[in-house]
Length: 139
Image 1: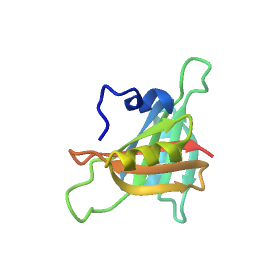
Image 2 (image 1 turned 180 degrees about the vertical axis):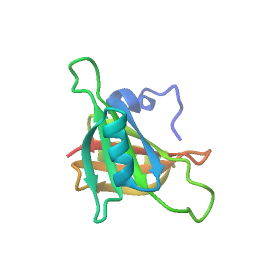
Image 3 (image 1 turned 180 degrees about the horizontal axis):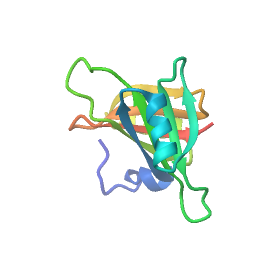
Image 4 (image 1 turned 90 degrees about the vertical axis):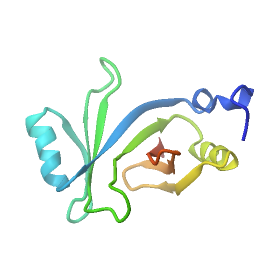
């Protein structure tokens, strides 16, 4: 592993990390999306699956800061320990280069880079306490 003091250690600056999108486990993605939109004042950004099983709601348009995004993932019981959610971190440049740097550092990659139908290329890692971080960049 690289030393934290080495110039290459600042991957966050080099790859321009920006924004976070919490992923919330929900019993029914469509119902949850309606609640966030109709009750809490969010806008539906997308809903995916047939029947719907994944959605993202947002609020804001950069006219007064970065938008707020929440991802809603319909899930049942997890086999091992209870799932605690994910943190989604947007990356401005070279998502595949970041993945390669993490692999080189021995990071536990749980999903390889994949281009998603909702316009993002993303991969996921698990940090030592078991939390999943998903890094994504626009296609």
